[in-house]
Length: 182
Image 1 (cartoon, helix red, strand yellow):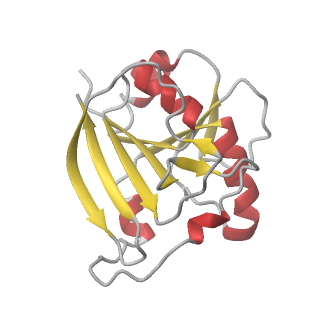
Image 2: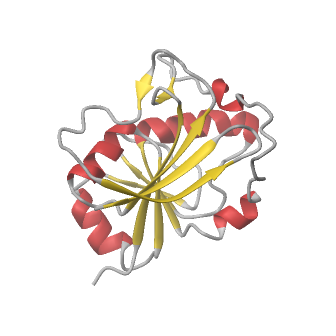
Image 3: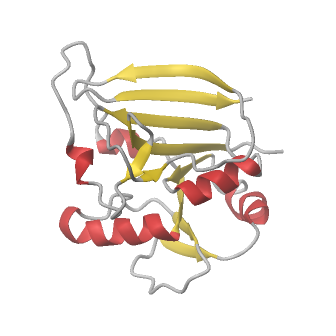
């Protein structure tokens, strides 16, 4: 029996892009003052809600390159990178997986973690949705239209009905939508 919850999480522009064509994300700093919004939870409070992160190779590479300037964004939380490539492992809490995703979740993640978060990547998002592994989607929409870039939902190939379970508006103009997958 599955006692875990798999959350796909992404920050996107209003037009649905998660990065510019050059993979840059400096636009994440986009904000405006929205008086009706709420403050963010502290990173410490957020990390209490996540037991394990899963990400693809491209997200891992981006996080590693950004960590030189901003620090590793996933703290000490166990992180599994799904990849066919070889990486030098720079962190104790990061492991690499190359294989069947259903086995990864059923044999390694579900037995050990209650709250599993996919931390970005359109390719891995597509795979988790098509394998019916994800339970919910948390989408944070920033107040910007990029016009072009890497789409969050890239040719999923099937219709998926969603049930809105929560929405929040933040003081920086970002909107968070939480959807339960049917």
